[in-house]
Image (cartoon, rainbow, N blue to C red; front, side, top):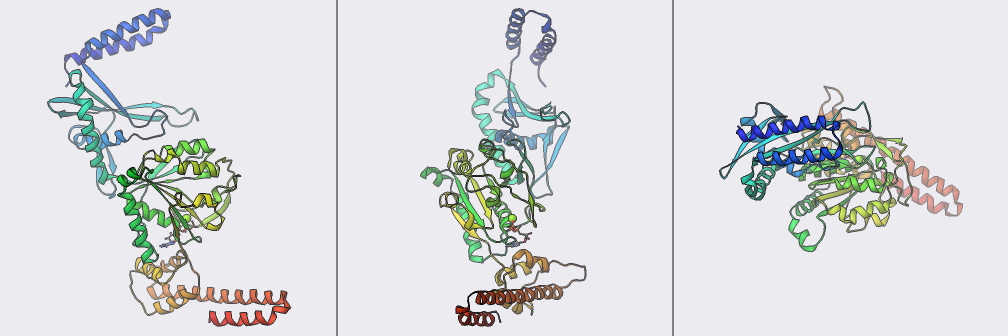
Length: 482
Ligand SMILES: Nc1ncnc2c1ncn2[C@@H]1O[C@H](COP(=O)(O)OP(=O)(O)OP(=O)(O)O)[C@@H](O)[C@H]1O
Ligand SMILES: [Mg+2]
């Protein structure tokens, strides 16, 4: 391993440690003088240079891309050389990536130079809570001889980062980030949503258009640079609850292989915290702000948000009130979308969702901010066929015609349709599930019919002059529903 010089160096390091423990017994000016001497002697004897690559920035907000690249680069060497390894599951959920564990060291060769990489960990306890587990800080340390300084800082590190990034591209495990309620911090989990464009019930032309738009965006780095615009794109998804807005976000993330940053605006204290949070978002990410009309009072005042209770990205929505004290304003959000903040990192998709597009401030959704407006609507026959294929693996059935006719007249969300297509008991066959859907569609149709008649009748009663006209309307609606 390292030679005699290194041992001398570490002897000095130990002496220095003893000194730091003993220095409190010396007067200040003496401490300073002795320290300077120590440093000079240590520098003279130590022929090595060390470079540290920390996992996070000093404020712990941003994960270093260099650290990730080094991790990938060292993966193979660690598997070969290290005795204590750490294993992480890769994107496919089956293979593993190994990296060296704490205090392990691996050797690398580059143009006759020998270098050593080691992993270091330090622990600090959070000042927020005395009970919290110590915070772990990891860093890679590169050690090499002084004479290789130019070689290493010049071409070697460039080579490591490029190679590490290339190795990491195919291995990237997607993450779902959510912001903590206190302070501008993200917490993350592995993102494993199965949604894809294939399983999405949506007009095939619309689907194709979205996929092409995403593909163009993904490959447009040079174009955005040329026209001088930040490499970002805004999507607005709107439509009634249960029409697939959250599912579409998951499908887009899977299509692009991007991470998702799910911003809970009501948990963000103010515009400054919002900016800090958004600044931490790395490239190849989707920034999702769901139910934007509920998260932000678009007149600039604060408002409580309904909390989405769901399993991951989807599910039923409860109307709980949160005791939010967020001071995030519309202008704060717009400043971010437009501003230079959003340019850091590049390649970001910002997606807003809402059930009530008409409630949104025009400033928020104008083109340039929200480049693409996508309506998700009730299930039509084409959408139903996609769901039938997904949930029951069938392309046709003698009940399809009846369902097609009913879906033309009745508004039912894809979420409600899928509820019928899922087997409720082990013996539920296709016929039973389709029958249950038809029954529900008929009940809905009947309800809509009764409601339409009631509305028209009460309207006619309010205005006797219009009575005859209204009665004709009622008859017309009855015929239409039939
Ligand atoms: N277009 C769709 N294609 C396939 N599945 C869908 C679609 N729409 C809804 N679903 C199913 O319904 C469930 C709820 O959908 P989702 O959460 O995406 O709706 P949403 O539009 O986000 O609703 P909300 O406005 O309440 O947030 C999902 O689990 C999904 O399986
Ligand atoms: Mg949703």
